Image 1 (spheres, one colour):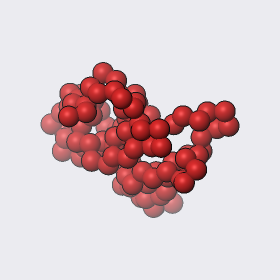
Image 2 (cartoon, rainbow, N blue to C red):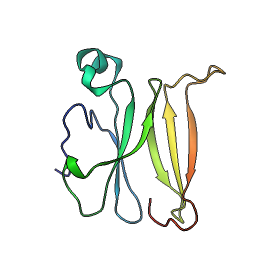
Image 3 (cartoon, rainbow, N blue to C red):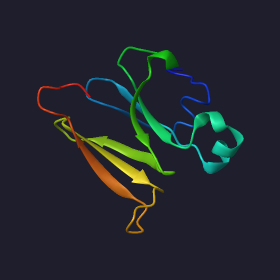
Length: 113
């Protein structure tokens, strides 16, 4: 067990990915039913990073918050480690679409994710 959260933090994690430095990205996947039955989790799914060599929920760092009922999925890093590709699903956009892929760039001078 690397990290066990309370349901308010780290509810139903299901997408995991290590980066090149060994940090673990953990994506929540709670549903509207979870929100109804457990209002303490809030309405947004969150993405956490567990730094390399750390264990326990107290070491989780919030990396992203996905609003509007969306869920972060499919994390993948570019070969050079400078881009994180992140899929968002079930988040309605003004044009009617609900899914997209984001490319998050690591700024120059910041080698760590």
